[in-house]
Structure formats: C-alpha cells, structure tokens
Image (cartoon, rainbow, N blue to C red; front, side):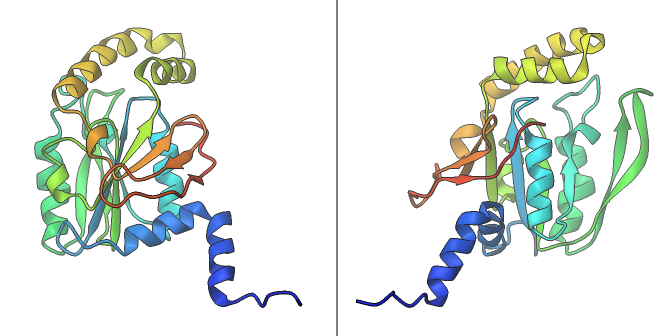
Amino acid sequence: MGPRAVDARDTRDARDARDPLGLLAAELRALPPSCGPVRLVAVDGHAGSGKTTFAGRLSAALGGAPVVHLDDLATHDEPFGWTGRLRAQVLEPLAAGRDAEYRVYDWTLRRFAGTAAVPLAPVVLVEGVGAGRRAVRPWLSRLVWMELDAAAARRRGEERDGPGLAEFWAGWALAESAHFAADPSCPHAGTVVDGVTGRIAPSTVGESSTTILTCGVTGN
C-alpha cells in the first residue's frame, strides 16, 4: 500500500498542534459576543501566576486584541473596589458598540494619572486578580484561570518585585485570600492554564475535551 494522501484536515490538525495559542484564539473568536459586539475574555488567577504574560501572548495570537489591566483600575485603598470603574469606563461603552477609555492609577503617585484606550474589537481581554469575579462574569464569553497555588504565586511575585515590596505583598495576600474565599473564579473557568508550564488543561465548563495544549508561558 502506498503512502496515504494528506488532506487539508490533516494539515490543519498538524498546524494547530504546533500553534496552540492560535487554536485557542480561533475558538475565542468563534464564541458568541457577550458585551455588545465584543467577546470579553477574562484572565484570572493569583497575583504572580502568569496572567499578564499569558494575556499578552493571547492578545498577539488574536491579532493585537486590546487588553485591560485591572492593576490600572485598582488602588491602594481599594484593591478589589474597581468593579464600578470597570463597568462605567470599559464595559458599558463596549456594550454600546463604542471605543472605551479608562483612567489609570499610578501606584507611585497614589492617584489616577493618565488614561488607556480600549478600542472596540471582536475580542477584548481583561486580566488581573478577580477578572472573573461574580460582578464581571455576566459580561464574559470565556474565563481563563491561571492555575498556580497562592503560595507559589506569591513567591514568584516577591522574587520579581524584590524586598522593597515585601510589606505590600503581605497586605495583598490577605486581601486576595479574602476575595477568593468569598468570590472564587476558578470553578467558573472554561479554560485552565498551568501557571508553571503554560499547559492548557481540558475545559472545566461545558463540553469535555481530551486535547492538552502547551503555550510556553513562563511567568507574569
């Protein structure tokens, strides 16, 4: 028997195996819109779990999808009190089919200074601790959870930020623990990514999957 002819589906499957982020991006683009014409995708997880890196790579795979960083909306006094700002400045304009713009908090000046634009796009990413919280989930097409336990994520963050922010991390850990105890995101995730290896686990919501994808994510 001669060699089997390679059809288009074989070629596509092989390409997807080499480009898992491209496969995920295609899946997200095919989801129904959730925020007006936008498919809003949250990337959530403990601080230091790799959210920013993963969101950046996913944005690139989506052709430059806008990314809203929740660190820009949180403050020293309100680490999780940003839901009203997110809704008024980002979600409601996008839901109305308009570009959005939000005020950016300066963690050095301890006040809002400057703005960030969020152009209307087929997919918009929101990344940060609590991105998949109860108040935001009705606006989401997909919730991505970065799977890395709180202690390991904190060690990574402290190593990244240095001893000068040790006091900040101690206070943050308490606030984060209280938040996830009252309003956990992980049980609602449709995509789970290993925060150490970057491996995308089978979906935890909806139809089961046997495909394991690796994205090469190494850190936040």
